[in-house]
Amino acid sequence: MNHALNQLLVAADNVILGKPLQIRLAVCCLLAKGHLLIEDIPGVGKTTLAHTLARLFGLAYQRIQFTSDLLPADIIGSSVFDAQQTKFSFHAGPLFKQMVLADEINRATPKAQSALLEAMEEKQVTVEGHTYQLPEPFFVIATQNPSYQIGTFPLPESQLDRFLMRIELGYPSREAERELLTGQSRHSLINELPIMLPADQLADLQAVASRTFVSTALLDYVQDIINFTRQTEQYPCGLSPRAGLSLLAAAKVWAFMDRRQAALPEDVQAVLPAVAGHRLRAGCHDSVTIVAPILQHVSVF
Image 1 (cartoon, helix red, strand yellow):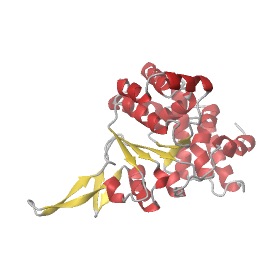
Image 2 (image 1 turned 135 degrees about the horizontal axis):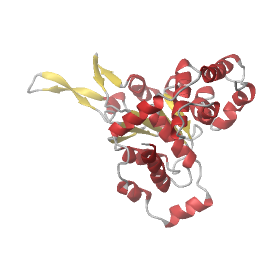
Image 3 (image 1 turned 180 degrees about the horizontal axis):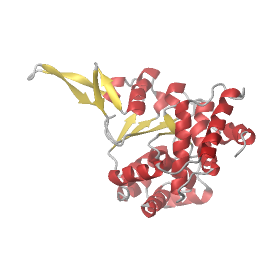
Image 4 (image 1 turned 30 degrees about the vertical axis):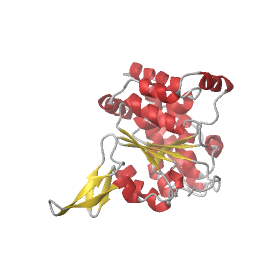
């Protein structure tokens, strides 16, 4: 199973050139059953990464372009009157896919953004008093443009906290960009990708990774990190209980991806910027700098 996972990472590396850490974090996020936020300028491969992961995992994929005139019903769906049956029937929207790409999510109004809140947390939606379950598995990968760009609406903290991780891709290296300029189209490469870990195997991986051993000492370390963010004046708002669960889940998966049966402080530290950065300081892009005080002041057991 780990061999198949390694092959998947290699295949993704062949499409998204020169970004092995970001790819590994994205896969870690999915194995931890979390949603992913990719924040960066247009044109660096955010959408390509989402589509690549959907292909490699064999997930039903839907891209939703978020715009300022998007309505919640355009995302969730709506009830339509059926004249023959003389009753209203629910027509599911594009949200009812296993992997949904919320493209440029911060170009939509807060009203449209809020359509994802229940779906991301409870994997269901409620329309006119009726609850509809979303597919299993269900992931949201959202792309976000920098807040300084025209026509963006900042994501509220309640929305940000539902993303297990936030990553940035950044510009490619000179060598990677040369290969992009001279190589095959990324879209063509994606279409040629085989399914490497179908949904049933993904569920098995998620189950095995969740059973990674966590010592009492490591739990103390995670709690010390959470408490530090709540007590220090360096952050306007500390990490929520959901953030603590996300940090622990991601650390367990990180250890699993390294073929270890127990999580270590190094695993927590590896995923901390991606898990905590957007929660501690919304709008700041440098997650490593954001969490630096934590790593400096919270001692490892």
